[in-house]
Amino acid sequence: AVTDHGNLFGAAEFYNRAKDAGVKPILGIEAYVAPDHNGRSDRRCKEYTGVSDGGFHLVLLAETQAGWQHLLKLSSDAYIEGFYYKPRMDKDTLRQWSAGLIAINGHLGSSIAHHLMQFVKTRDEKHYAAAKAEAIWHAETFPPNERGEPCFYLELQRHQTQEQLDINPHIVRLADELNLPLVCDNDAHFLLEEDWDTHDTLCCISMGKIKSEENRLYYPRDLFVRSPEQMWKQFHRDDIEIPR
Image (cartoon, rainbow, N blue to C red; front, side, top):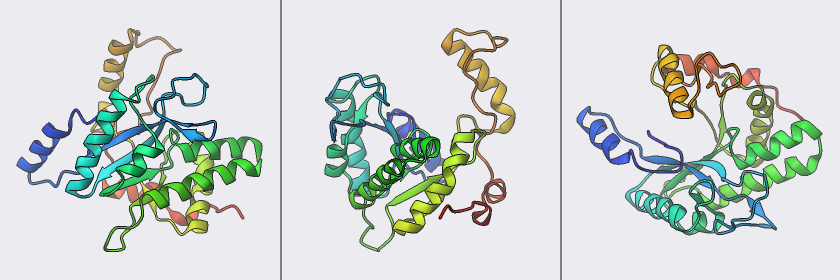
């Protein structure tokens, strides 16, 4: 699969190369979704709030041809109507063009993770309730397909980020309470583990930084394409304690 941030620019080349290699291509996007403001998610609202104004992240995968057509509409509309820091969708456009899509929500940049991080910090149940409401909205917007297969998943990741590890048990709790499926995945910003330094160099070039600078952005070293064996080893359901 390819899920570039906020765009579908690489989809055509990826599709053709995957087909030539005998690999089934899955086309998607890591969307930016306008946050709720005054009770509504509105991509046209350009008012600064300081809370993910560029949009919460939501992975969308095209399951069908109709889903691919909807991805094109969502992405184009996000640039034309919703651009504020990033090309943003909103809950109305997602509801309108959700058919044929699989949605995944839960990693640190997502709306559910935002509320769960607030819950971990404050232990205020209103934040867990907000995360639960988000999960319910997504489950209703992306209901099971005609074969009864789920089209909305809660996401677990295990990168070198303590915040993600802190919220994972609560994501599992949400899955149990709402009977939602989990998907374990791994962000991939470079192909192989040893490619980290090359990627780091490219980041320095793009940001105008020197590699020896300490106070600059460093990507975790584990954002490579893990093998199935590495993924199985990384995730064990029985070692994530579910809060009760």
